[in-house]
Length: 263
Image (tube, rainbow, N blue to C red):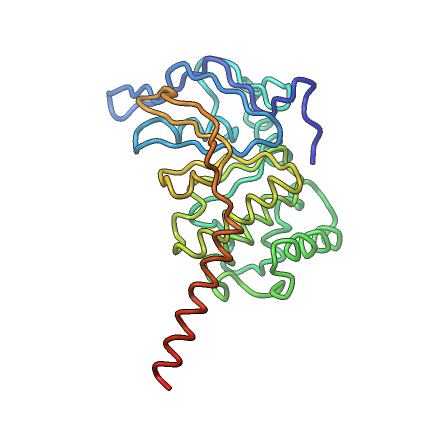
């Protein structure tokens, strides 16, 4: 991973404002928000629809620039960078995971994962080797030449996580990463994100409207009306690995009981 700045803040947002227009109506989506995220934190950004959390996520991901304020990413103010430089920052320093996976349907998963390295000019053989290693890391080393439609939703999200990690980003931004998944698969994905955060020190920021998903973060930041209404440590953080193991044991017991009844 990239080295964090001396003060430890991977993300340091200061008095960010962002508005957009719907017809003739100006919507002040983010209204003077300040937020600092230390390297190695697992932050869950929460809020109802229209609270400003998605607009703020776009600013954090350098997908959009704020109207006013400063955004320091790894010590560098990126708020006023031109589009071409913002694209480079996104490719090199930020990993993205989305609800819809955003995989290329006609491309093998190893080439999906390798795609960000192609934009960096990494030779094909090298980037495919690195992508294969990353897929092994997320438990899909035996599926390299499968296409997305040959995988389950949870497996596709693992591919998306591998793609997000291939550039060794400063921060992983996940926008509703479990929104298209069932409850068991959601826990599996959160267990993977917790593992990356705990064992490798990866800074993770998850945007979610689901309290059940926010339980797995170390910190909760709640948006309301374009402002942060609450920012607090999660003292009751859930362990996704433990919950997943309990869930699997429970389902195995139920299956055994059903088989015995049928016999």
